[in-house]
Image (cartoon, rainbow, N blue to C red; front, side):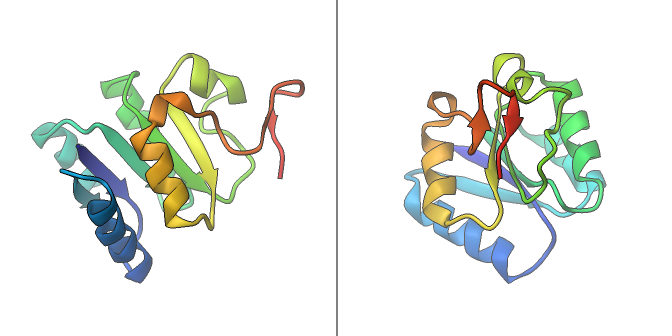
Length: 134
């Protein structure tokens, strides 16, 4: 399994990378720190899942670029924002392969979502109101 993690440099990113590679058999994790590095990563490779911290600089532009390249790309958004990365919450699941977890989140939840990506919906999603509950 090939994963791209998009986040700011630091201990948390390196720890997540190491723990994901240890937890998921035959997994390799590439890292992109900037929008430019995301462009380059997608020119060189394809990824089973992209994990992005939506709060980073140009986080939304990274998501938009990835969806332009491949609207079916599996994207796991880790964010502390209430707002969805596309217009309506359920659109992420119904029209794209986007899931989200609130930050901070235990690494076991990230691993769970990566391994069974299409079987999960967003954390705290309220089907009646079509919104993320905090």
